[in-house]
Length: 360
Image (cartoon, rainbow, N blue to C red; front, top):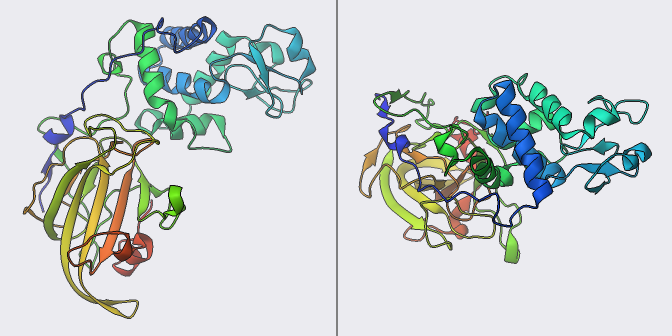
């Protein structure tokens, strides 16, 4: 199988308008801390993507506030915007204070309660992370912060992009290159996938987040797995088959911009039907349908198109009911005319069975 044109990856969802620094979303103090973060990043020559990561981290850690901590009594004597309560963490980035005031190793209390110095320390740590510019925002932030909730930063990507763009005086983060990593564009080819011995391939090469059967609102269960991948990575047909559905499903009314965790629906998605003749868990399987959700733009394929294992169906996004870029991926065995949760199977053991296990 030859390479697939990456031109489709150059398509971007319509740019959402930036949040104005004066629209009331953030207080004057919060905007000032964000401005400090952007300014220090610019002075140090950190690419704009780093500014977004830093601002999103501060949004999650402190709500863009310079927090003192009652567990670090001397912090109460220094200028602060409020109180935090996490161990001996202080400041905009909630960095842990070094002895004698704390048991951390980020620096002295005075340094960490000074937003410019705390920001400088964050960037120093970020720049030591290999390939940080290629990572999802939450992975880059987590590599610096070592948080107990590593996925928490991702939800701040869009607000951070909007605020950073506004502070920098641009209408959109794309104008300064601070957005999420993109798939290759233009005439370059996406390399072909390595297909396994049974004719299957990972839809994306990424670690597994939420697993099959995880609880969902209203007593529902997760009908697939979430593969946590960067925006615009190619999503591949897991096996040879025919495209039987290409659709937009979102309670937001559009799939051409990011959804959110309160929305519902698969966003832009595809279904591919695969003809089989195997015995799995004591059952003869004659067909399977794989569903790929939350694509960044309209899928690259059309209904009736025959695809080979590894062909590109679309690109990772966050459309529909989604809190951040990922691929929600389902496998349905012998579904007949109705592809629904009643015939969904756990994709992980299935992909082990066909010798193309999921995960990194």
